Length: 126
Image (cartoon, rainbow, N blue to C red):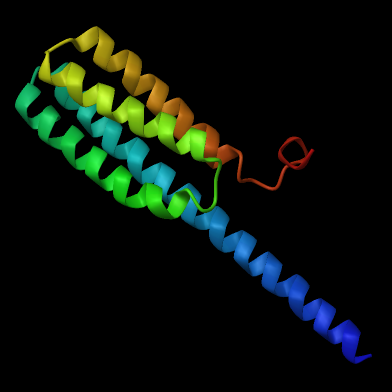
């Protein structure tokens, strides 16, 4: 009987860690998507200096966050998002609005993808 209780305890611990991971990754993805959307608004208004500063903040925050997200997700996905954010900043510095928005859309889609990949759905399990 003791082994059954210990097994249930381990199952509960696994579910708690899975829920914490889901919450953490989803929360961080939402934060970065909203920050990128703020930068998009600045680029649409042609406020390039403010957009560049926000892109630098996003880039630094991403690299700080990526250290912990790397433990939870596939490293290539995390690197790709970081590269897209870096390209966003470079295109904002060059005032290349079209290229900026191409990278911005890609970064937002990749962030949404990692968020959706954490949900306990059949397609994510198989």
